[in-house]
Length: 212
Image 1 (cartoon, rainbow, N blue to C red):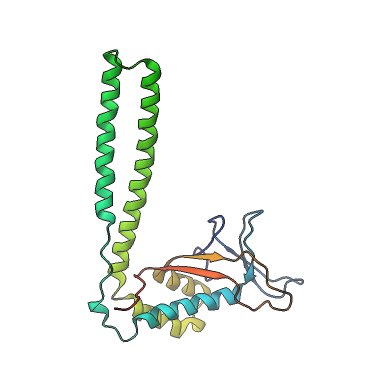
Image 2 (cartoon, rainbow, N blue to C red; image 1 turned 90 degrees about the vertical axis):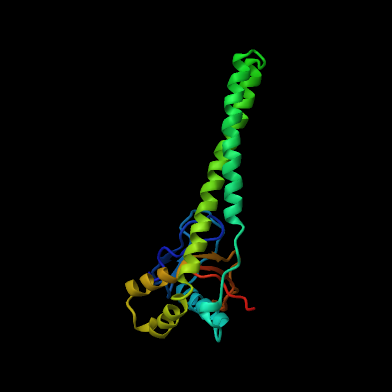
């Protein structure tokens, strides 16, 4: 499967899988492995072609531009990360104060337990938020780093794609794409199996260039 580990279901978040053709199904399909998920499967070759078209659109967006002069939009995430870290420090101070107020008899045990739970719950939320923001900052930095190599690699892959082995295709695609979200919740009408009635949201290792 050249798309292995790349396509995720928009409904449940699981990796989509390739199902080989059978005597009743004359073509390979891409489908969600989650039982009961409402995502509808599709012909594998159509999804593969659509993904390559998305890469062509990204290349086209940069066409004629001087890549070295293109800079990604400044991110507000580092500032947000610092705010979350300061809030985490404040929570630790509040935690110590909660214990102090209990020891001084100002808080009853009931009030103490209530305030402690609020503090612990918010701390857990903050830690998750900090991890998410940190991951996104790292991804944005990776995008900026790849801006000089992405387009040449992409053009090379599109030019040679049909000549590559399945393993080579998968490896090359994973150098260009972080993730692709597949969304399709309605079945095609009978006899209309080749229509592209799904949406692919591609997250490449490069900022999507929208022009000056």
